[in-house]
Length: 75
Image (cartoon, rainbow, N blue to C red):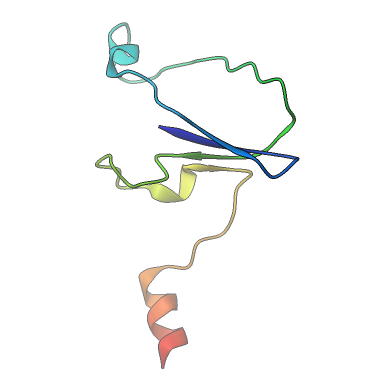
């Protein structure tokens, strides 16, 4: 699942079938053509996949506080 955010503020959710991994289970390349200018992309926005590294699921990159940093901010 990808969530695309466009320059005009609209969003689109796009589901990609699991069969995309059939040819290469380690790496996949896919080209997306959009009619509008994209400002942000989030891969797996609903945390549906078993992903141990969620910090690389967004473009452009953004910093994510560690669990320890979030704990420090609460106290």
